[in-house]
Image (tube, rainbow, N blue to C red; front, top):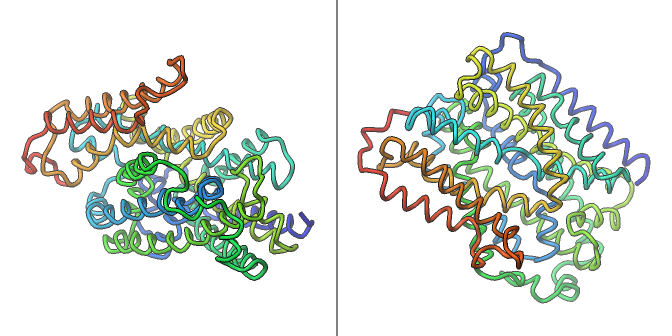
Length: 463
């Protein structure tokens, strides 16, 4: 990269820090002010923040589209649009009406503090941004030639330092900049690729045949698993946080509709660029680096720097958001619900949670070296544990009897975890019976739901 390219990245990092630090939280700021920014999120800010936060897995998308082609859209696109649509239609208004701070707040209202506390632990683990910190390490290797672990540590610190001081408002301010950059960067790369190589004829002539099929060479069961994992959207803390923070119920609902359109446009660009990466660079050792490698191969000075900072912005927007979600879950939901701190100490201990989250994210990124694997593992465990208890807490006509929601979370999440660990207990290194971990957990969850619920919506406290 040319010094001018690096100067663009440095300018971006300075701009992010300025936006993040422009208004710090006061020492006596309430938990609501820190976690939701006073519930004044406008429609443009809602869309920019949700779109950029939920698309931080950009290198994972590159990894998958490079390896399996068009099926990326069927795995990481369509199922998540459908799940987001369900959220918009059935949960967005309910969430905004609730006046709550977090998902566990609603679990506590509906099923008690023990259920909320256990659910908080699951949410905390699901929101640790290990996959996105891993991407920062890969980017640092590509951009600066740093060792992977140095990039992981440095990228994590740069992504969360301003959140420590400014809370949710700092996250939203930086998301607005990052939203614009992510779209601009991929539009530039795709435009250069089409102008230089042509479009469909070039791709058809230079891609493996399976890359232009719906399955990409994967089994239907594998793809179906991702549709089930996409149901995690219905228990996605980033969605609930932004709905809680929205200025009105209409902003919450319409903001998700607009976000779905934005994701569809962005998916078209990212999937197509992934196809070009495979066609132009067919022998990459690590598909996770496909987008940076493609940009280095085809973009001139200036545009290269713009694209690299666009990828950096896309990843950082998710690292800061999820680090903040995990931190507030630690302070507001875990410590408070286990009776370890008072309500007045939430802001202080959420900041401590931010430090803890960053350390855990770094360690997990060093353990897992595949973005897709991290998504797969935590989605397969967290989704069965939370899906039905959270849905029923907001919308369900059938309500859990006392104690059953708690055991649903523990047993369904536990069986999925044990099922995943079975590959390390087996002599063959394979998961029991070849069944994906998410399915046993969901079966247990549905069985408990059938046996442990009753038709009585009046028993559910008003959201």
